[in-house]
Length: 189
Image (cartoon, rainbow, N blue to C red):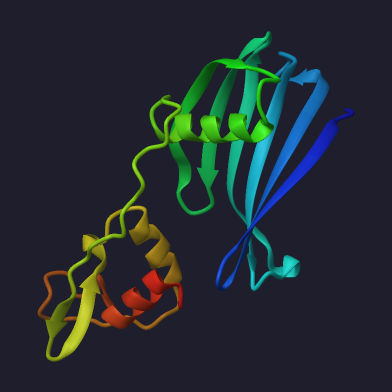
């Protein structure tokens, strides 16, 4: 099966590492799903400390052209390593092919998947406001009070860390040290 592959790279530097975004345009002449569809796959990789040897895929977007023509239709699916499917499978209708950069198609497709088919980006997320509790001088947060998807990311971050057992809390095993929470938000964990 022969494939045509075009690779584009966008690098966004971060304090503790770097994200690298790869967009692969895959064309299979015999067709994906026997429909002759073309697929754009956007892969987001995390390179801790900027080291390629430590890279791992943290998210993907599959953008499949499902209707040909000057005004094509595209179906979009988003996935994240920890969260699984993100947003809704959406269709971008009547997109004017060859009228803009491929990045315009990528951004509009991702926006549609995150915003119930609307090409506008959803509102910018705000930092989670989580109350800090205290028990016998120990400051802690309750994991159940952390909104998703932040809670999933924080739990993963705490996987091999010591956590307090707060006996006077209704769920004593569902707590984390306040300093771990603050370090996590600051990018220091």
